[in-house]
Length: 247
Image 1 (cartoon, rainbow, N blue to C red):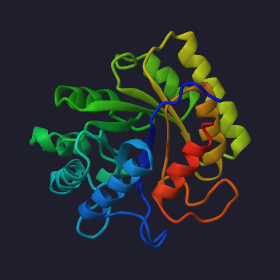
Image 2 (image 1 turned 90 degrees about the vertical axis):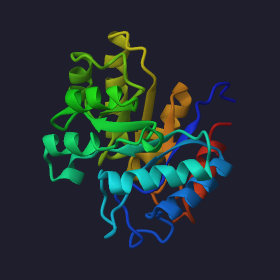
Image 3 (image 1 turned 60 degrees about the vertical axis):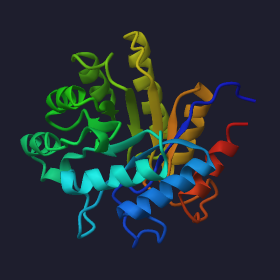
């Protein structure tokens, strides 16, 4: 039995829509319901992508605040995070920064936000979020991203390093994970690491994270299937499956 297991984060929706899976939560009420169920299933935090009135991902305060507020009301004390993917602002880092600066209601800001090192404007947005009291998950997708993080000013002050293995077959994902982790270790980086995969690499990478005693995540953002390839019912099913692999 593994003696130390970090809380599992539930990534409830990501870029998916109901076309991908009927249980993908989009509206604030749906996110709140999904978050409540995720906590009951064993999740320790949630990561969401708020949507606008058309169902598109958005960082606009008009959509971020209601989503965060709804989840907080449903799950008091639950850490709530959002993505800041640059695609939500048309690829413009300055627009993203200015959009995030409009998150003026402190009580409705997320607890943390993921910011990808591979996208322009990481340091500037990380500084803005820190000044707002929002933790930063540094999204590291490659060895290059890890070196960029370690060479900057935020490696030791982020909430966590989010090591993400995206669009990779399992074997390549695990090799890349090991290389990134080695870079972080050699740099004596003490920031907590959350390691996760996506698509076909989801379950192998989750198992690697559990074996290493690292934080990890699971949810419909990352996969729609169980380890055997069967389509799951919802986020809760994924969380329960993940927790069953900790013993």
